Length: 226
Image 1 (spheres, helix red, strand yellow):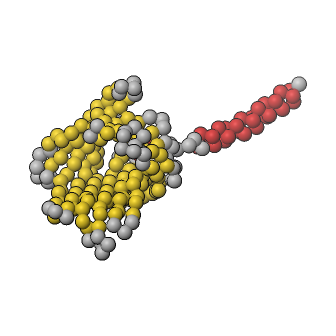
Image 2 (cartoon, one colour; image 1 turned 60 degrees about the horizontal axis):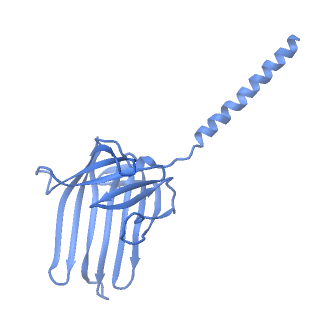
Image 3 (spheres, rainbow, N blue to C red; image 1 turned 45 degrees about the horizontal axis):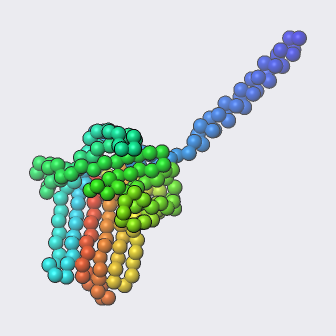
């Protein structure tokens, strides 16, 4: 009888050794969703440099440069009962000038997507899980017409203004080229930070390449914190 109980104890010990690694393996294989590319914690802020160039075949070229600060101010519940964030946006002409509140935007992050309301227009900025090549309609909740957004780079390192980010993604929002028109809209996000870069090129040109009208916009991160 003693040998029988010893055998059962040995068998139970072997089963424990077998199941512990299996459980650890299942825990390790839990899929990464990418929620940290779109932070929602109040107190987080990012400062950007803004460079905007407007082209007109009538009035010429106009260049504007300033700094923008986005601060996640507080949580609230939206009309659909979802936790959302209030984002305060401040601008200043240079680092030597005080910040001035310019407008308020809103964001909502769910299990499947990240939304942002910009100037009262809602965009689907990201979808989860983050996967290279995934496509979705960024204008699904506005009346601007369907626009395919796509992850064309994911989980790559990137350096902007001497700030290095270990894991970033790129969302290609608009991409259209021909002999007289160029449209290229993209945004880049970093884990734990959110948006770190926005590039927009929307111009019409002569056949020889001379810009007739349109605009270019570049938004680059300068610093961040909480």
